[in-house]
Length: 475
Image (cartoon, rainbow, N blue to C red; front, side, top):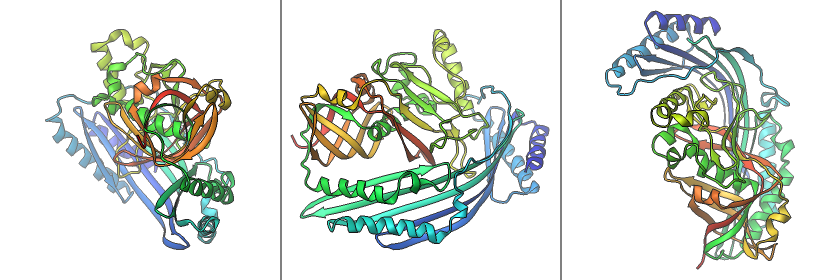
């Protein structure tokens, strides 16, 4: 692979391309779907191909291939240059790439257990045991659906800036969704888990433990009442903190979306949260679902502080948008170059060789502080404890909504009765400004994010307390 990449890069330079990068990939993928006690789908296959991206006169040209031979790669380089040359006639803002230090490295996956060493029968048996356990937990649990996937990928990357990286990546992931019914009341619960250490997800989160957690969540919510609509103080558990941080703030911190007009564009170097809040996106946490050694532009993964003690100090970048923001600040706010980061952060990620790298989160979280859980609760006369999320979305103007699948009243500093059909909403920055206490605990959860293409990532944090948060429910 290295010889093919080297020859293709030389060929691109001979054709006067400003920049050429080659991403080649070989991978094996297993996926299984279980519905109740039945196997609905299984697939095992190889995924092989490559992506060639060139910069010519300030314009990109991109071609993907599914046959990795020297002839096909060279042909793709020629075609990508042809595309870029044509596009360059219409480019109003030529692309510039931020400089990075070249690297040469070969990275092996650090596996505890290789998923390839586990038979398909054993994987299916574990999933069926989990599904059957949930259905037997309580006769009011009516359906269970489980998705499972594992991938073992080897990537080969090279560019004309003298970077060459070979990198193994392993992902093992599963999502369990259950529903329950009693009379006319429906409830649902979900649990997602993943690892980059291999086939260890069931050791870290045993099926029996998942059955107990999801079974209790489903059945307790059947007796729960709707919340009181209004603005209330609330304590958010790490799972909810994570999805709020990811959905409500994280996307606003991706430089491409910020440059498209997100509310954060006007807040560079300014206060966007209370002084209790530090938000980090980190690709270096061992075993975390959003961790890797190098991104898909060959930039080393790193720990990036986005918000420090309430101040917005960096966005997440690829090389193109790091350069754009450096130019933007130099022209508009040169004084901010000393306090706001505009260097590539290692956030360029592509779902696979069929896609170009775009800016994606890795492991995004609020940093812990020093409050105990009991201290977070004690000053709340009436409010809510949000323990687990259902889903979330946010807009570039900073508005967000997050669905909650498990929640409880807080009465005089104590956890009270469960409530159901809860959602929280509001303005991201206003909500972050009202965070008045941050816990000392910490959890990181695995998930998947869609942004035109799929990415595996992590999110989390400690418990936090928010003085005022808008709760949807009955008036």
